[in-house]
Length: 278
Length: 174
Image 1 (cartoon, rainbow over the protein chains, first blue to last red):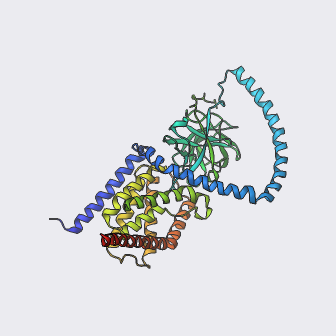
Image 2 (cartoon, rainbow over the protein chains, first blue to last red):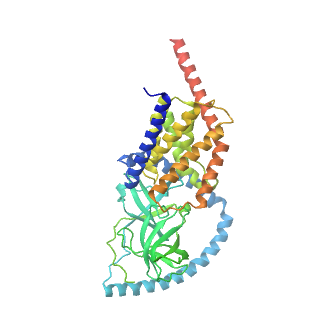
Image 3 (cartoon, one colour):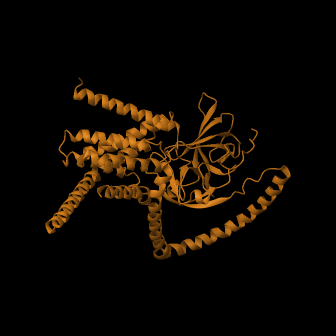
């Protein structure tokens, strides 16, 4: 009744339709692995951990024993920096104490006392199109889906999948990442989204704010995920188009995601922070 | 037995790609090694031996990646269908055609990824960095792909030979 050629054409059309339907459905239900996420992580992550440990061990041997000349020079430089840092820290301690007093006076909730768990990065996303990492802490360590991941330098991302001993983290620079943010000086509010080039877009920032290049972007805490005040990046480009109510702001993250080796998972979900009045 | 070896090879490639190559800046824009293995299966191995393995490794990749679930399944599925279809018209293992097959495989994969990213984020911009990344992947695939495919094929032939000799000897003894 139907020729072989006809059957092949119909088959290809059906395959294309099935592919589009599957991807459309799963695009709307992001981070759903139908229970297989934990199994695959448990299968692959232990080997990733072993390989990563071996690589780092070899690298550490090289760095600690064969590069002592450079280390000696670096040591002198670091000692000088340490003296400056100590002095700086002393000033910071004073500010922190005065800030604590002010907070208690104003009845502000303590936002920085978070329970953290340190984790090592043991694997990265197999595709260059998406930005995720695998860490060596999971459900057993208190890590769960939706928890924020940070570094002293700033926000790293969000846990999207957790197995018993391992978890996957969606990085800030992934195109699907979005954080409610504030510009630190102007208090302009917007959403910071990742971009494939490794920068972030600070969207929905009203034109009326005079944002300067170099201004720090921080988490607003309003998304109920990232603790308020955590640094995200600095403003590297501001474009005010002739039309429209928003300006185009580019933010460069403080974290060097290519060299990320350790991260902290914040175990306490922050309460929603009060919105700053513009 | 062959499935265990295939799974071990695939998991080895996944680990190589996600944990080892990230430390080597030279391979920053290397193509997906599993795609290479799918192309190998499509060109050199029978369908009944390949399909289950492709589904398995696709699920592993889908769960490790930040993309929507099913993206790798779709990608590898189409690469496999494309390669099997091409295999009907070309002589398998032709040295001149292998680079073209590899390039086609990498392009198919990146095209599906671009379409999916566009579907996820309609206003997503494709910077020149992404296009440069695709070009570099294709160049890597054209240069190293045929060598690796031939290596896989040779290793498999040796394995078959070794197995035949082993079982032949055993049968002879019995």
